Amino acid sequence: MKTAPVPANEHKRLKTLHEYGILDTIQEADFDDITRIAAEVCRTPISLVSIIDAHRQWFKSRHGLITPETSRDFAFCAHAINNPEKVFIIQDTSKDERFHDNPLVTGEPHVAFYAGIPLVNPEGYALGTLCVWDIVPKTLDDSQVKTLQSLARQVVCQLELKRKIKELNTQQAELKRAYENLDKFASIASHDLKSPLNNIISLTHLLKDGYGGTLNDEGNEYIQYLNDSSYQLSEMVTGILKYSRSSQMLTDQKEDIGIYGLIEEVSELLHVPANAAIMFDREDKHIHTSRIALKQILMNLLGNAIKYNDKPKIIIRIEVHEDKTKHTFEIKDNGYGIAEADTARIFELFERVEKDKNDNSQGIGLSIVKRLVEKMGGEITLHSVPGEGTTFTFTVPK
Image (cartoon, rainbow, N blue to C red):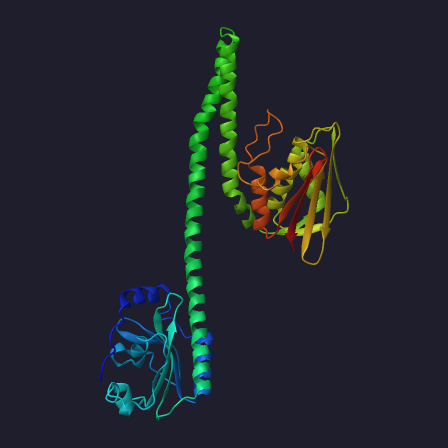
């Protein structure tokens, strides 16, 4: 008996093999279906998906064989992987000097015929084989060989799919840890930054009240600059914390919500000015979703429609439509409007359109809206005509 030589790329091959996380996993129908078909096509009692590890061949799927693994020293497949591009066939093991005294030939299961197709992954490494065994010498015709090769490619596809799933699960776990760390950082930063900022704001008030009369106009102006800057930074810190936690709102249990009642509730919270009118259908339609997420979306969009409006009479129209799969909300205003060049970036964090030099917003609200809508499984778009108004359209899946 001759043991197979170790492939020249063995170290990298084994490293790649272990990345799949396939070794010692349970039998699966997807692989068992392939070995069953291979045995049927080749008319052999045994068919295997054999994976070559450092010191063993392990069978991911075995048709007609009970043994889950054998020593690599005995493995026909260990020879097959040395020629990844070729079909490895031994028509009669008793006449082959490499295998005539192999324990798998002289003892159970008495292998007399072997055919193996190397399982070559996209990087070019032979991870094992799809092979068929028989207890009598035989040959395979071209059709059988080509079918075996097709089935081997399907085995590789299954291995790649599982590899991708493993990678995605790892990435998901890493993202979850990163998100938890970011949320923790945001909470700590919010507290640790806002405390001294509040002190600065309080001190500027004390300076103005206590010493404003003794300072000249320039000195009072500097104090006001310091006060305004502190307020802006405080609002930015608060905004960052809101953004980092916005998707957590969706963990709330979904419920049936009366849209008319929710809009009324949002209108009261916004303290709509006397010159503004919010128009919507008074029919109390219902939607099943997260109340807190939908409320936050409406608060931001309606608040912006009121804030960014230069008309003597502010008019906001809300329309809600539905089909079999979703509810569609349209919020139309007659405000400033947004230039086409700005629409692509308006939903990005910290992006805002300069319309009013006294506008101290941090460009966080619409990024939160977009994040919430997408977390709910919907989409948000806008259409705007500068000087005439803007329409925000977002969907909520049923």
